[in-house]
Length: 57
Image (cartoon, rainbow, N blue to C red; front, side):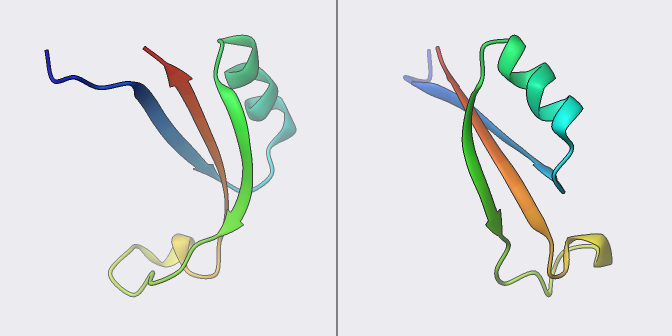
């Protein structure tokens, strides 16, 4: 094993249906934050709000 404790993921925007889907799958919704240092990412990530999730393994 790689001794991991969580799976973490994110999704852009405030998509309530997707947030609820991930929560129904057991992920904890950690909130929304604005991405920083996006110059190396695709343009749809620039100035984006991102929802963060995690689930314990």
